Every structure is written in structure tokens, then in C-alpha cells.
Amino acid sequence: MQTSDYQRLDRAHHLHPFTDFKALGEEGSRIIERGEGVYIIDSEGNRILDGMAGLWCVNLGYGREELVEAATAQMRQLPYYNNFFKTTHPPAVKLAETLCRLAPPHINRVFFTGSGSEANDTVLRMVRRYWALKGQPEKQWVIGRENAYHGSTVAGLSLGGMAPMHEQGGPLVPKIAHVRQPWWFGEGRFGEGRSEGQDPETFGRECAAALEAKILELGEENVAAFIAEPVQGAGGAIIPPASYWPAVKAVLAKYDILLVADEVICGFGRLGEWFGSVHYGLEPDLMPIAKGLSSGYLPIGGVLVGDRVADTLIEEGGEFFHGFTYSGHPTCAAVAQRNLELMEAEGVVERVRDDLGPYLAQRWQALAKHPLVGEARSLGLIGALELIDPATGERFDKALAVGNLCRDLCFASGLVMRSVGDTMIISPPLVISHAEIDELVDKARAALDATL
Ligand code: PLP
Image (cartoon, rainbow, N blue to C red; front, side, top):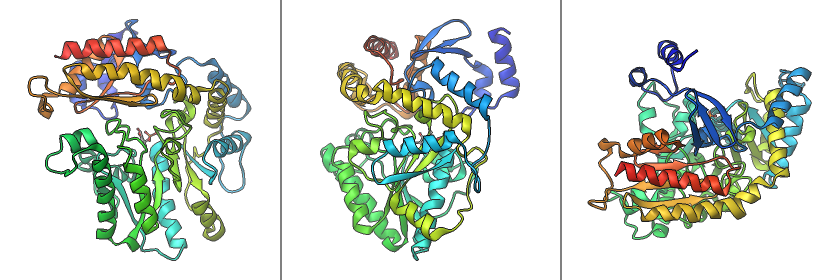
């Protein structure tokens, strides 16, 4: 079939996620046919550097035969069986052991799901159940953050703080509140009277104070948990000021509120540690995971459960009426296991921390001098550029959609970057080379030039 055939059939039958169907009908999709290393190749033969690792997941890059072999071997052996009741299978057990070895010491159990959204549904039920078992059933409120993304299931989007999602198809899950995000550039430096802070660190503490105020407003005796990503990904690669996490930790400890660190993006090396929580010295009670767990080769997620919650659920909970057909799917688990083995053997996480992260940071910072860029930030292999109007030094009017223009220019020139409003984001495969980082930065600069 030709590109135009795929586009016609796509238009006729395929409802894409997060897409304006009508606009897609007019423009037509780009058909991605292959992947090699950090590149995707479209149906016209164009090689495009995938600066987003798919959707923040293809951490080992495309075309890893070892993962194909792991899937094939497991499919021959046992393509599917479940983990309900009293059965399991070697891939799920091995993966559970590997994950708990890689996780911080207080985490020794994992509940498998098929995705990050399902992981966050699981989290919501677990934290409420935990407090019920502890004799505090009124502790039901969960606090998330504005503009956070925790998935597209009803619980996932309710925990998330994306207003446009909340407006569609409600009502949402009750007893979920949101507090401000630690986005210094957008809400501190360019905040509309929301911040009294004069510098990022004061602003970081103010965001933690907003969490404390929300806890007191809801009543500390009613709050079960706080959920947040160590670095907010889909919201705009928001790297919090250094003051933020220590202040948040102190607030949560003061009121004995569980911490859920959503590691769906930050986990598995993105920030240069196995988990983003380790980078920030967090000791979360629960860590939802997905994406990089299998480098996106097959869908799998889970919740890493700390001893405090796990012991209570196990010792006092009886049967937990929760689970998915594909919880711990053997083929997905075998691929995830092989993915983690390869990451360990190749020292991928250490390389991000010691080599690739610092190299990207140095190259990325050079873009901060571009007239269109108000801030360049990165940590490990996640990064963002904040676009500003060179004429005024202010942020652009949202309606101009400058970020989308820049994103489209990038794509046309052979680089995938994502735009969230006027924040341009990268999150490339963790196996990217220095030369490929150079190419990424050069293409980003060219797209900025073309956007001007
Ligand atoms: N949590 C975070 C932080 C995410 O970024 C995502 C997806 O982007 C999810 C949860 C949902 O994961 P999934 O799309 O696998 O359901």
C-alpha cells in the first residue's frame, strides 16, 4: 500500500488518542514504518531523530533483537497465563524480584498492570484501602498537582490535573484535589500575581506551603496521599527548584500522608538513577511504573509497593478485589526482564548520570542564548525550552500556538520534539550518542531559527 492509501484508511476508520479527528482528516497522518536506534523512518523513507523516545518509553532505542528474541521465546513457551488466585509463572516472578532489587530498600513488592493509567487506578484503590485497614476510613482525599498527567482512565485523569481532560466526559472520581505545580518559569517568573516569590527557591517553598494549606483546608485527618512525578513530564518537563522536594517531604511527614511518586516517565534511568525518587532522595510509599520498564516494546506497568502499605494490605487486608487480565502478562514480563538485564549489563543508567546527561545539559544550555528561548533546562535525558517573544521578552499569547509551529518545523526537518503550549520538550532514548545529541540540538536550533 502507498502512503496515501494508509492515510485514506486511517481517516476513515482510526480514532487516534489525543487528536482532533476532524483536523486529522484534513492533514493526514505521517505513517511511521520502521525504527532503528534513535531514529524512526516514515513511509516516504525520511529518517527522523526521535527526541521523545516514542512517548517517553523507547529507552533502549528501536530494533533491539534481544527484546524480540525474549518475546518470541516466551510466546513459544507460554504466551499467556494469568496470576490470579494461586498461579503464577517464571517471567512474572523473575521480573518482580528484579524490580524489587533495583528499587529503594523499603520497597519489596510489586503489583503488575498493563499500563501506567492502570497503575494509578491501582494506587488510588490501594491508598484508600490502606487507611481503611488502619482504622481511618475517612482518609480518602488524594492531592495531586495542577497540569499533572497520571493517565487517561477515569481515576488516572482525576488524579491528573489537566483542565481540558477534566472538562470532557466527567464526572471525575470524588475526593481528589490539586495544588499548584512547581513550574518556576511559567508560574513564578512569569506568574500572574500567583507567586510572591522573587527566586526559584522561594517559589519552590511556596508550592510546598500550598500543599500544606490544602491539607489543612481538607482536614489532615481526611487526606490519604499526595501524588506527583519527581519531574513532571507531560506537563512540560518541569524540574522543580531544589527547595521543593525537601519542603514537600517535611509537610507529608508532619501530617502522616502517603507519598506516591509517579515514576512512569522518571523511572528506569531517565533522570540518571533507576528511579527519579532516588535522585531527589524521596522514599515514596508507592511508585507507579510503566513505559521504560519494557522500553515500550510491549505494554506493561505496575505499582512498586513500599513495606508500610504492603505489610498492611497483606497482613490485615485479606483478598484485594483488584487485578487485570494482563497483570504480569508473561510475554510482556519476559521482555521487561530482558530490557532491565540489558540496561544493567550496558550500564545505561550510570551512563545517563555521568556522561549523557551532563553532555546534553552543556549542549542544551547553549540554546538558552537563542532569542526565542527564555529558559533551557534539563536533567538526565529530559529537557525543555521555554519560548518567549524576542520583541517583548514576555511569553507569547497562547492563541498564537508558537510551540506547535516550532514542533511542526522540527518534525518536517527530521526531529521529534513535543510542545506543551510554548514549552518544547525532549526525552530521547537513553542510548543516544554524543553525535546524535549534537544532531538533536542542531536541528532544534534550526527549528527555532525557522520559527522566528
Ligand atoms: N503517569 C505518567 C507520569 C505518565 O506520563 C503517563 C503517560 O504518559 C501515565 C501515567 C499513563 O501511562 P499509560 O499511558 O501507560 O496508561
